[in-house]
Image (cartoon, rainbow, N blue to C red):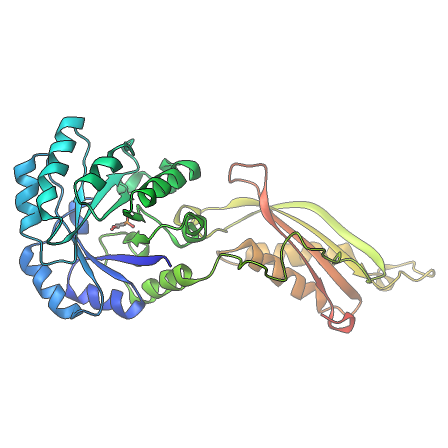
Length: 365
Ligand SMILES: O=C[C@H](O)COP(=O)(O)O
């Protein structure tokens, strides 16, 4: 099970996170950089408010890699269930001495080391963390304006990190400007927790977190993305072609490209990107006497429906576009089956998207 860590700045936000379904309440001052610390007094008040309903973690702060400074900061925060200690860019010797200095607290609180995915983190340090009594390790990002974790580290690097941590019995977390669409991409790596702050607000990570947004992220994290063994709908089992059994003539529109506001990531909002539509309608056989538009199902109807879709405001998913289009076109009783392909063309690979096949009610779907 993947747990949901929500970073909050005070008791009120802690309650919003708790009500929204966060599993770990993580205290930090987001206005003070990646690991801005809050006072021990605020930690105590938040712990009292949470009242044992969830574990509370606290960051030690944005600290220089000096053993005495880090030791003092951790000592003042031991009331929290976890203390997150940032391993900021420094010489290997300085990093090692900070880890060794923290070793004395391993019995009193669970210590989580934070590495930064945008600062060329050294995963070899995990051996030292395990040897010095750390309970866990996580990745975050330091420069919050420079893109999320998945922009800085490849899927293979993230998998390597999670695997190495687990092999060393370290609890492992991933964070760093993560958004909802990152969850199904990171879930297969099976981290112990995913951490969020910016995605829980409407105006960036310094705005107040909103319970409804916490709820959305909680729902995505608890969703089951894994196929259980022996499931009858195994992808390799024999599938009937969706076109089987539907007869008729075919009217199609191929490769109509329109600029649309579409996408789930924040960077896809407020701009248009090219989307390619291809549609094939299986329709009643065209009568032999057909001579004018009244006798046929026109491809113009398809083009108009696509253009109407492009006029609407921002759409999150290509799937939604495909389904809306299929529904619109199937409302014409002459249409027996619709195949809709919707492709985004601006995301790097040639095209990414979805193709769906839907049948009219009379055909039985
Ligand atoms: O510990 C997790 C961080 O607070 C994540 O913050 P962020 O999502 O704004 O990068």
